Amino acid sequence: MQGLELHAIDLMKRAGKYIRQKMDQAYHIEEKTNKSDLVTEIDQHVEDLLIKGILEKYPDHLIYGEEGRIERPDTLDGTIWFVDPIDGTMNFIRQKRLFAVSIAIMIDGELRYGFVYDVMADEMFHAIKGQGAYENGIRLDPIEDRPVKEAIICMNATWVTANRRIDPNLLAPLVRDAVGTRAVGAASLELAWVAAGRVDGYITMRNMPWDYAAGQLLIEELGGRVGTIEGADMSFLEQTSVLAGSQRFVSDVLTYVQK
Ligand code: IPD
Ligand code: CA
Ligand code: CA
Ligand code: CA
Image 1: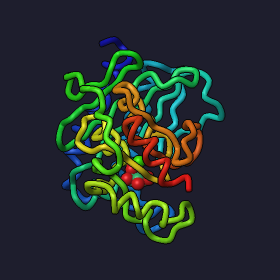
Image 2 (image 1 turned 90 degrees about the vertical axis):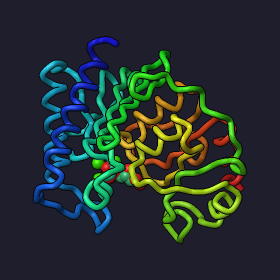
Image 3 (image 1 turned 135 degrees about the horizontal axis):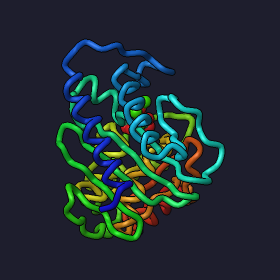
Image 4 (image 1 turned 45 degrees about the vertical axis):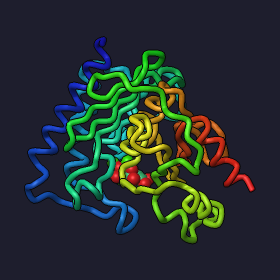
């Protein structure tokens, strides 16, 4: 491995250590937009740590992080780090597990590196464009091509209730036909689990680039596909739906939702 990825992995492991040290002490929690959209002072501090560590070594790189410590870029030109200091903040607060630090690095619009670090499991998933995807340094196998009827799907139950983004009647048959569904509560981890073959797909109507970009590269490096629920490519600058899995899974889901 070379400088950039070693630096990213080192920063993320340091962030993980900090989180583990602080998580059982008292910390401040704030509601952002609603009762399920929370931020803690630990999320903010970890984002600051990561930004500092990135800029110390790469002062001209751009950073697009969830907690808004730096202004978002307007275009995808240059080198952009998409940073989610704690993906799965609710899990972090309540379950004290199943949360991740997620970082993706894009160069001139192309995803080049993806890292998802499951802090409590000490599992580091990483992918380098053209060089495969790895779990704790061990190369992952290509994603198995399972259709919906043979799949375990990560999806939050919200999307099969009335909502503003999709007709729940389109998604309910997926839940009925699948082998099972899971809702982990941390998008980057759910995508990493697709890459690792623990589940077969991930579907959400609402993610930001720091949620999905790292997981996207993991999946793409293993032959899978990540796009929107309409089957389009990701834009990386705004909120989006995400449909991820093997090529077969994704095209099968599209036949359910494009009715
Ligand atoms: C959230 C989690 C959640 C997903 C949301 C994300 P956060 O990230 O990944 O699983 O459904 O869309 O915003 O806020 O915990 O970093
Ligand atoms: Ca959040
Ligand atoms: Ca977060
Ligand atoms: Ca997130």
